[in-house]
Structures are given as structure tokens and as C-alpha cells.
Length: 506
Image 1: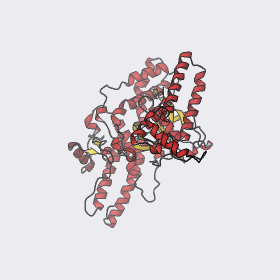
Image 2: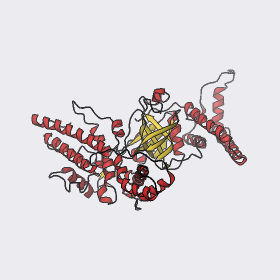
Image 3: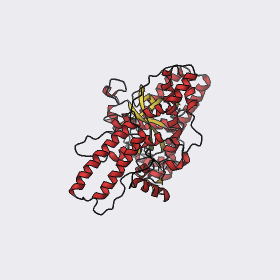
Image 4: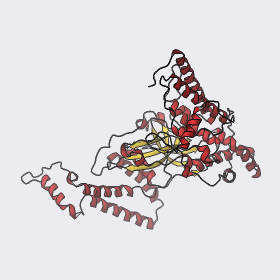
């Protein structure tokens, strides 16, 4: 995941392939824009081109008199008397001082930035996002995770530069593609129905970034929500698509009673209620993102070769004091959309009961591991950020006797502990910091992040569940039920081992 190989060096520290991708993209936009361009716009673009040319000449030392000595040394080595027509391969940049290099690279950055102007950000249009650039790679990300990307591939460096030149939030899509970039142009993986392409991905945001001198980008990214590709606008050099946000079924069902009343007040049929509830679920998710996703900066992650805690932590400072108004969202939706959406309700188990059962199964696993450890000393193998999701009052009213995880979470809370692996942040017990955070969103978060633990534990005789399979499950209940069954298998195996005697913990 962390591509640390530097790109090939060139005079301007930008690979030819990246430059070609930039020029090709700009040429397409130019041809389209020339059809509608006005004279003032033409004059403005002409002046910008002149400015770029001047920066280019300046960066090649044509206008830098203080580099005359350096230029003279270069010429003296390339045009030696008596050797007319023979040139050496000495590069003048090899002779520059660190200060001169910094000045030249700053000019290079200015030239690069001139290609990324007037970039538009990505905003929600009801339940969809339009023109989302897609990062199609050979692994799956799921909501609640975060990562450090070290991007050096030319077409994706170009893609991220375009994103970062626009306004925040810096959104992009993460979609699984077997083989990664080598299959971007493979017709078998074209983003269309009927192909082998994965059409379910994750909306990501860039939390922070740093661009290195060789053109690489170091990005801290966080996985937000699940989406489905509706249609691809572009396939190469990277994909761009319109996508639809896919809330879990339980979120839509929770908004359905109010949605039915809203469509009835608007004198519309009940078939429109599902779409209104869908829109409210999307808006509610966006409403809680500042609280659910604590921003991490590159320097927090250790810079170029850094890493972050794999799970995103909550941010108390991101709490929104304004109450979420689902009714207004639904009313706006029915005013702007006349398309009825079929109710795709799937009958499922109670997610709150499954949330309780997953935590009890996790606690049982910890107690079994402790029993099997001969020294009776064991660190909790559950990510501490995850412990902040333990309900203060479970659906049953209380936790079973001896439930250790609640005690451990309370201890972290009392001690105001800093949690995380590579990056540290304050421990947040979500039920204690706000009473307005929906229990469904707490269970939703658990249904994803629990797989960070489960994917590292393999029980003989069982088939592991892939991240992509987890991502494509349509409800909180489905993911929690799958996690509960996996935990039951682990605990069964641990009980069998305990009957054979203790073992040394690795």
C-alpha cells in the first residue's frame, strides 16, 4: 500500500508521463472551452500563458544573473577548446547550492500550480456525487479506516493534484481493482454493468498532504461512506464517475415513517417516501462526519515514511451543536425529485441486539485468551479507538457480570488516555460526550471497524470474509451478524484449546 519507490528524475522533477497526462487533460478542456470562450477570457488566458513562459525561462537560469557563474562553469565543461561539437553530460543543477535548489523547486511548483487553476470541488447533489475521481487499486478500504498513501504513479499524482487544487473537503473514490493500474484499460474491468469491475466503493477524504521535491505526494486519507458507481465519465488515464451514496438499510427505515408523512403532505404517492428517507440518511451521515473523523496531519504521521493508526478516532471539537433537521431534507427532496423509488426494504435482525451480542462475544474472547495465558498477563488485543463505541447502557439494560471491556473503557476515560498506534489522540467514549449521537451510527461504525480485528484471526476450517464482501453487505445487521458468527467460531476454537491446557501467548 505504501509505494515508496521514487519516480524517475527529470530536469523539472516531474515525470514525462505525468506531464503528458496533464497536457492531454488540458488540451481536452481547452478544445471544449474554445467553443464558448469570450474575448476577455481569451486575453486572461493569454496573459497567464505569458506568465508561465516567463517562469519557465527564469527556472532555466535564463534570467537569473546571480547564477551566471554556475552557467559559465557548465559551458566551460561542455564546450572545451579543441573538442568542438563534443559535449559532456554535466547537468547545471548538480552544481547548485541547497538555496539555489530551493529557489528552483519553488519556481517549478509555481509552474505546476498554473496547470491546476479553477478546479471545482465535489459536493453532494442530494444522494449523488458527480465527477468523482476514482483511485482504483488492488485492495479494499472500508469506512472508519485511515491510511497514508505515498503516490508516485503519474496519472494518480495528476489526479490528486487536481483534487488538492480545489476547495475542501478533498473527496475522491476508492474502488477495488484486481491488478491495480495495469488493468485500468482492460475492457474486462471497465466500469460498466456486466463486466468484472467492482461497482461498490468508498468515499474518501484527504485529511492532509505534502508534496515532495521529486513530485511524489504523501497523503493522509480517511474512508467515510459506501457508494455505488452509477456511470463512468472517464476511464483513462484515471476513472471519473457519478456515484450514489448507499446508506445502510436501517438508516433509511428509521427515516421512513416521517418520509411517508412528508410525501403525503406534498400530495405525492407513498412510493416517493423511500427516496426522501434515502436523502435524509445521506444528509445525516454528512452532518456527523466532523465528529466521526478526527483530522490527522502529515507531521502527526511522521512525514514521508510515516504511518497512522489504522482506525479513525472521533473528534469532540467536531461536534455540531445544530440539531439535524431530517424533515427539511425530505421536504427539499420531494420538491426537487418526482421520481418514485421502489422500497427495497430487507427484513433483518435488530442491530442494537446484535451490537450487544458482538461486544459480549469480544469480551468472551478476551477472557478465554486470558485464561489460556500462563502468566495471566495479556494486553487487550482490541483497538482502543474501538472501545469508545461500547454503549454505556446496552439494549438489554446492563452488561453481563464480569464484562471486562466496559471496565477497561471506563478506565481509559478516567485517565484521559491517549490512544492509537502510530498517531495518538484523546480517547473518546461517544456515549459520554454527546447524548444526540444516534445509536444506529455507533452500531454502524462498529460493524465496520470490528473487521480490523477479525481479519487478523483465522480459524482453521472456516472461510475468511474479505473486506470487499463486508463492504457490499447492505445493512448494519448483516455485518454485525457476520462478525458475531466469526467470533463464535473463534471462541469455540479457544474453548477446545483450553481443554488441552494453557499455551504461551505470542
